Each structure stands twice: as structure tokens, then as C-alpha cells.
Image (cartoon, rainbow over all chains, first blue to last red; front, side, top):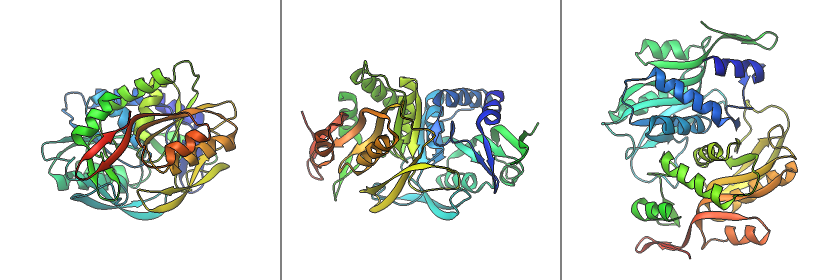
Length: 191
Length: 191
């Protein structure tokens, strides 16, 4: 998606350790008008697919998923990274290692909101090692819902997550796929 | 706001320990069409006020704030609960005690995205003891930005946060104010 690639070129900053800093528009300060264009692109890509629920994971996927839920006309559910007082009752649980935070979390969704009749589109801001997306796919599998696919904003295509999950049959539509990046030369997009 | 109060009456569940469970529509599964109506109500309440930025705190305020940012036509910024690899550089920091999680977090925003020229509307899902809102107000104060006010979805008016912050001069517009609640009788709204 040219609009997103152009934005990454203009504002993204490559930091050491494989970090792409896009916090001026994507995951700290957020440009919701860009998110609407991204959601419209996912709707075009997933045209003809019935979607009854959008699933994401806290925290930086939530705003993108919320705007996507407006465009798809469905509810959005976010997986939580730890059990809080506000989630009583039965939950589906999976474990996710966070590249950004350097830790492992239990990730949960309430069984009340992910149903066997649901047709789920997963939305997230980044796909790199695939840990978060694999965890969300596992939650969908546990619930018996149908996984329609995943809409990702930025895929680091030089990391193994996208290949691993596509080989398992997950349809992934990434709006910007980065082939390589470094501090000196910046970002090179795939395709 | 009658639409939100009706929804709380229909789907909210009062749990022991002063917990109001609204995770079917507000803070786990999320009804973004309701969020749009809430955002339109805040725009009506803050009519005539210039708003250049919406500020919220992760995680459950993010979706409401994102939809509000679409309605107000501005960027949205979410304060993060811990320092991650993705935030480099200078940040404003405050400490917030979480009623829900039973812990204290450092809460940060990048200095790049909260500017002295900003006119800020804070958005959050709950106001109870006021710790999160006081922390967000402190971040705005540190930045030199102008705090226009706060839009809250549900205020537990029997807890001290709203009174404390209004006495400090913060304009707070809560869409549903709960006067009292218990497991037997459910929720009673103020006004």
C-alpha cells in the first residue's frame, strides 16, 4: 500500500537491534485518518469474505483494529496480556513472547466473545517473528471460530513470522512488507 | 448519555469489590458504533473548544480515543505503561496506581508528540479513584500544553476521583455517572 510505504519512508526511523520506530503515526501518536485508509484496503483485499469479528492484541493494535471494525461493521475484541479483576469466568489462554518488551505473557480472551460461529479477521500493527499472530491464531483455533485471515500493517519480511504462518495456511495481507532495513540505508520494501 | 446508561443497565454486571464488568461492549469486546455516538456527544459537550490532540492511556481507553480522534479530526496519543525498546529519546513520565491491576506503573509519553502548542482532550473509559486521569493531567502539565478537559465514559461518582480533579479545575464530562452500585440492586445513575 503506497500510502503506508510513503509514510514509513518519510517518518520511520531504523534503530539498532532491528527496531523500526513509527511512533509518530502508528503506535504511540496515531494518525487515525491513515488507519481508515488501511482498513479500506483490507476490506478490498478481503472482499467477499464474511467477517463477524476483528481480533487484536493490546496495546498498539487496538486503535487500528477499532477503526477497521468501523469499516467492516463488526465488533472488535482485544486479547489481554494478563488476567485482571475485570475478566471473570472462563477464558482461552495462550502464551506470547514479546520482541518489543523482551518478556513472555499469558494472553487471554473471554470465551463469551469468541464463538464457534465467528468468522475472525486478526488485525495487528507489526508482524516479525510471528509470536503475537501465532498466539492470536491459537486463540481462534481454541474457540472453534473460523480464521478468515490476518491484516497486518507492517511486515518485517526478513524475519520468519510471515513465512512460518503462511506455510501453516494462514492468509496474511500485509500493507507494507519490508525486505531489509538498516540504520544507514533505511527501509527497502519487498515486491 | 441515555444510550450508554441503557447499555450499562442491559449488559453491565456488578461484581464484588466495586468492579463493574462492561467487557461485552466497552473494554474487551468493543462496540465501535457505540464509541462513535459517545464521541459525537463529547464533540457536542466541548463545542467551541479547539482540540489539537486526544490523549489516553493504554489499554482499554485506546479504542474509544481512536474513534474520538476521527470525530474531532485530530491525532491521538496513548500514554504507555512501561518503557519499551520502541520509545527512544526524551519522555514525560508520571506514576499511576492501577485499581484494576493492583500495581503502580511508570506512565510515559514522548516529548515529541505533546507540545506546548497542543490543546488536549483526555479520553478514558473509567474514572474512579482518579489515579489514571491525574497522571494524564500531570503529563499535559509537564509538556506545557493546554488541558481543555477530559471525556470519560463511565464515572463511579461514589469514588473520589471526579470530585478531587474537578476541585483542581479540570473540566470533566462523564457520559454515565454511577451514584451507587451493588451486586443485589445493580447500578443507580446520578442526576
